Length: 127
Image 1 (cartoon, rainbow, N blue to C red):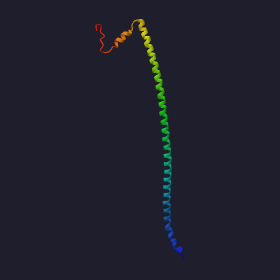
Image 2: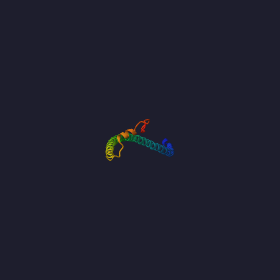
Image 3: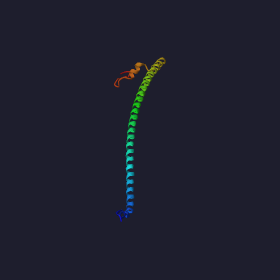
Image 4: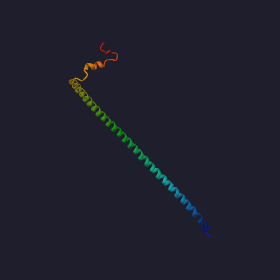
């Protein structure tokens, strides 16, 4: 009998071992592929997150600038309106003084000045 015939009975024992090695290699290949996919997705996600952070920072800066611009405009507008209101109040005060003077019901200017005298001044008739 040739030597190859003597080794032939061992082949059936090697088939399950070869199948086990194939399964183990297949599992390792799947794990390696999943790890590569996970790493790729992680890198892509980090890139996207970095881009989003940059966009958020840019939008935040633009919004802050817009808020400051609007606030400055409103302050200027309110200041102008307050100035106009002060002028109108002064004009109304002058009109009221003229009307009171015409009707004789207002407090004369000298009486106003006496009423504003210093706290220690004696404003009594004999004093």
